Amino acid sequence: MSGVGYRQLWAADPAGWRAAGTAWAGLTGPVDRYAGELAGAAGRLRGGWSGVAATAADGRLGGLRDELTSVAPALIEADQALAELARQLTVAKAQLAEAVTRAEAAGLAVDRNGAVRMDSAQPASAGVPAPGWSAPGSGAGVGAPAGAGDGGAAGGALAGAATASAAGVGAGAAAGIAAAGVAAALRTAIGRADAADRAAADRLAELTRSAGTGWASPPPPGRPAAGASPPVVRAWWSGLTPAQRRWLVGHEPALVGGLDGVPVAARDQANRLLLGVRREELLIERRRLLARVPPGPLESVRLRAVAGRLAGLDALTERLAGGAPRAYLLGLDPTGEGRVVVALDDPDHADQVLTYVPGMTAGLDDAPGELGRAARVLERCAALVPGERSAAVLWLDYDAPDFLTEAASASQARDAGPALHRFQEGLRATHEGPPARQTVLGHSYGSLVVGMAAREHGLAADALMFVGSPGVGVAHADELGIPAGQVWASSAPDDVIRLARPVDELVRPAVLGAAPLAAVLGWPDRTGHELWFGHDPADAGFGGRVFSSGRGGHAGYWEPDNPALDGMARVVLGR
Image (cartoon, rainbow, N blue to C red):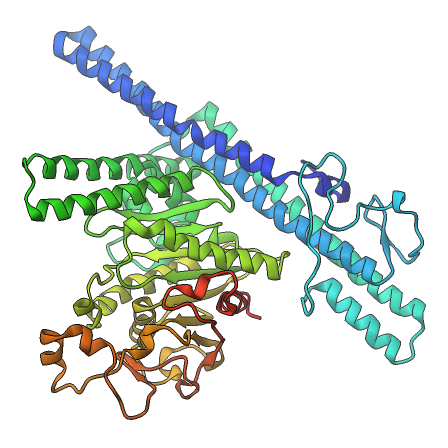
């Protein structure tokens, strides 16, 4: 696609571009196998051959292996470029369909060249297909009727037309105002698609040039100092050439994949290259535990835990291999309970970004399920406002409590604060274009993580949300460093967390040591609004804002029929 126009956008097939990108990324598997075969061949030669010729052959095999390895980041980058094009086209097509729908509502028509006419009697054959249908040959449906109250240029124009009519302006003038608004909305959609097309073409052209001059080249000496701020890391990364960045991704993936301030695309490339290594670490742990025959009780427990993490990693790997929106792997550590950071869609190019922090018992074993919750919020955002682009991040980069005795302490939430602070700063530093609206959502113990990080370190966020919270570590919303109008909470009427009542400090240690369940559940308090970790954020007296939730217990906030899901999406959208 070059010089995208109205008809080209109607006919564009985002799914086709997405599938092409997935095919490119799928080539990393064969590349890894061939590199492994070369390594094996070199090893066999070294075992039975020596001398000058053997040294030369070994060097040549090593060089070929390095060349193959250096191709992998470029293959993933091609996938990213095409996935980004597909996502931008999806949004642009939704904006286009919305504009056409608004035109029809105003008695206007849009012809095949994208011109807006005030002749509502124009024959259907001369215009675009009715909203909700795709243009001939597009292969993909485009249905995006606007919801009541949606914004946008076209919506503003229609409102202006109504106002003008009410003020006595002629019907022709009112229709002219509406037509101008629809035309502006069409230009916005087409402009978005054209910009995305050019960006993808430039990125792929750079990869093509690199194929002739070398995919990678070593960067200059020096790396960001330990603890360097995300803006400093971003400045360092921006000073490198594309070939130097690919060298770092291929040769130092652990460094690149874990640096807040490195763009999302590069972190995703680096962490994907480590997937096989991380899985092998779990397999080694399992073999070590199985070496004891028969395994003892402790080994049996650990074996089940390793099996759970392996299953979680395999399910996560399957999601990374395909699906819409594209998933970006921003962090992975299989040790302990397992930590993972995954984004759905690219936060660096989104209009809104949600960071979701899960609570007690969260780990690598159930990361796919937690990611599904983030996905459901994104789906609702797209349904409410098809013409805007949202991304969601599952942030599980802390040691979540596994038992009530652990969950009764704020220590693990306090320990997580610096990492969450840096992550949010990194999202700000790497975002392209106007700043995105950033929202951080904490569920259960995760709400305490968010609250304590905001209070003690500050969060680069425009809004905070707490669902199913046992308290967020503060007595009032104004202690969180976020405008009170952007602190939101919801608590289901049958959520057991509402029974998490505080205990007098003098008796807390005894209660925790003797009967933690009794301590966390059902302890009375004087006000009825004090929870284990502070004032209930879903109480009006907390000073934030509350959105409703239906019944569903502690985990039902993401159910499709729960109004809390709609509430979460609207907060993300800023509506």
